[in-house]
Image (cartoon, rainbow, N blue to C red; front, top):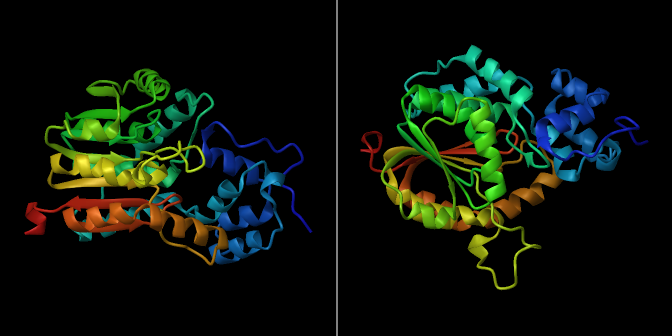
Length: 318
């Protein structure tokens, strides 16, 4: 028997993927039980894997439907646990961040942020984590290679600006950059921000020393890449050449925060087993770069996966 989310389920395109997925599944009892803590992650994943709910019946694609199995039951508690671990690692000195300010910003972003026809896969716990880290790290100079239309940066900028810092958003897509500038201006967060519409690899070679890199770039998908394209420039493999160019300017002890580091299967999810194998292959050279230049590496098992990496050579690594 196939469960149907609702007969008029819309296709999930445009906006924050979490909102689209959650809206599509909100009436599904098994999803409700999982999010309410009444059904374990493994049991929800097994139910989904049995084919009781097809992606097309929910108005989702296969990736979006399976991502629902990775959502934390308690976003706030998830981030608190991550911060406690990073405090033990010596990455941050405290776990206290302005949670009320985050909630207020989230409400403003929900009302004002324009996505047009674009979709972002930054999930709520990832937004909260980046907001908290930027308040706790107080970086003076931050670079966002692959900034897209600014949805990842919006959560970092309050902490950056509270510290009197500056930020550079880097994206090769002029339409995405124009939308980012409109959104950040409307939210009052464009002060001290440089909007660089350029290639992130070339830009990385020009950087003066900086404190924090927030990475979420993406090359063309394999099926869209022109014949003969360098494999290092396809999809997420582009992380390696970007950071090969950018890491030399990241000060010793500075942090790299990378999105889409989905490298661990939280359950026996068959879909993610394939995706993780693909990610491992794409990130092979990037991981080699991290092993050479970063003395601390932490993978955060968020919905899309976040990596936190510390540049070697700082006081904490001596």
